Length: 113
Image (cartoon, rainbow, N blue to C red; front, side, top):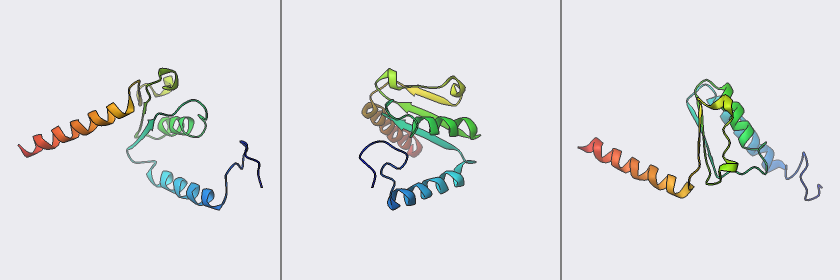
């Protein structure tokens, strides 16, 4: 049993190991495809779990692109190595999603005409 603190085995039971295996398999199957790493509202508390892996995969995968959306500019980091493969948007996530849906609807209407 592990105490309720951060450690190398924090909350890493059988369910975690099974989901981690599926995640790794998914990544291996898709590393040579076009991939968008979309990071929504991720802060700086634990960058090693989301930000850094996304950055590393975006950098090393040939057709990967990275977008981070966060209204807090301090949390919206884009490494200089990803300047041509990434975008940091200091925006409200809900508004960005509404804009995307509106754009999608207008594109569908144009296809019909």
